[in-house]
Image (cartoon, rainbow, N blue to C red):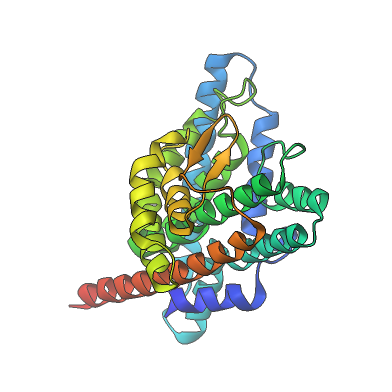
Length: 305
């Protein structure tokens, strides 16, 4: 019952302050390593690869040691649930998207731009219109459904807390340094490529969950899967286009990052489409939780035989 308990803790308490959040600690370590990176491209490439390998190993070893130190009883199941909760997030994502939806509905475009930049995206938002801000929010809901929920759950099922936390370190490193600009091209290459590998299966599972959830809430389930299949290759990331394309198809809208991609062939999203995306994502989350809980239970039973 650790998986559903972790999610209930997330719904109830959300994320702790950064001073107490392991992901924030990881960010500080990655930023510290980035400041000490060498200058030449080849050295930065080797240094970046070493940073991601050592960081992943260190994170996995700490998680393994903590997990081994906990005996198998009900009290320690709660501790494990808290540790798993810290590796995933739905409460914060839903809250951020809802704030943006409210600002757009109240015609406060400047505030909506600020919120989407603060909470969800790293792109320049200064010139985005209301539809583009809504698009950025919906894209983030879909992509983070994979990165911040489905993927950590999948790796927890496969390898327990160490695997979930190794994934979280790699994903955090990719978010911080996995870019193709001159500052990060070599330094973040290792993080970006490893994150691509680790998200190959979760991104496609998320697209399936979105397509199934769309049917449940009265959106376009077949359209979700067909758009994911047809448009996923438009994004620079080999994985992000799957959940984002599925969400575009589910809602019958177009999700666009200007000069980069356009997923779906419908109209630009309206503020209310953010709420529709959250309803789809909520049911997709429930499907992922049920699947992860069932798989974990089946694996536990097979180990005891």
